[in-house]
Image 1: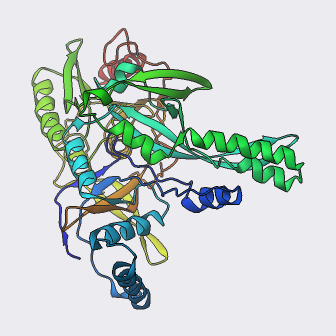
Image 2: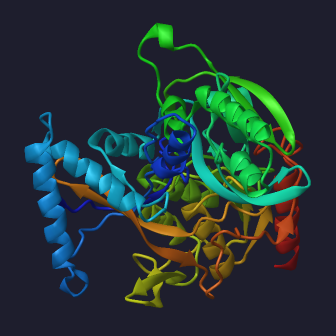
Length: 474
């Protein structure tokens, strides 16, 4: 199967396009349902993500001819002998989905042609559905049954960030929110039969187990898989009768909220900028793509010509980003050619390689305050850390999300594609932020009333105060 090389780098969860990798696999639910007298087929959920696009290279050292031959035999048997006609495309795509899902990595997934096309539109700032970046967060907790507890794994559908002026923002959704239900249907996030299993281990009375089984059945009857939940959240209805707002049950900081959110096409401006107090240049990229990179260069030139004495780069909520445009922006801020490192695997060993700017830097030579929060994701996190380590800069706000995945996007001949995590971003000094987040130099927990406005944005005010102190020193 030939592939087409796509130019440019993409490393981001596309806005509201995440088909999240589910841990509630078909065997987990199907087996237990059949044990309880029912039968169900639960397909594995999947989640595409984007990054550098390169052509897969053949590697004879790691090929497994016997397994390839086995697969080919099964493929032909199914195609030729299944009781009903089945297309080769359907079998191939299904096989690729299963292969990548076996990695249990939400950023390594197969993309059907329409899903890959959605990526392209999102990266250009055209977002469908509620307009939110979604991911699945794995969490280990405990289940209490009577006086005993048992470990319980959860996969929770979480809002990473909301797009500016999107239905999600207008409805009040926030970074960190967990979506527990849609229109009253529970989004399956844990093994609904865990209570039954624990009761069986405790040798509980049969009637108690029967009641727990009935509760689990009722819960499943009014539930949806994570993949279906995200499909609803990421689509803009074309039929007016399907365009009614979604009613979401959201969990936030120990509270349960009911939120009504519409679905529409959101067109995101690549970048906003202005001068603050006639002295400080404020730049807010809403995404890190080619358009934002061009506008960043033009805005920076305008601000410097206007007499800017320092810069504020607001990366809060920036969850859509491409590596190459981010490096283009860094070339105007960083003072070093190398801005980060990437950890990657060779066989069973891990190595690191430098992440360099595409050309020698042309730094602005101004103090830089970088604003971050939990909505700063992936490439935005790498960018914030690179600025701090290669310029006169400080980071203000709250810890970032903590996803350092460097992911390649491959396009296949039929328009489909797949993504594969090939490395982890690290700081220039080797600092790791995966599952930890980039920690700010100055922690400011207060949320803004008016983002980007002095008098209504505590993080921005602390950043400007620091810039003023830098001006006095110079």
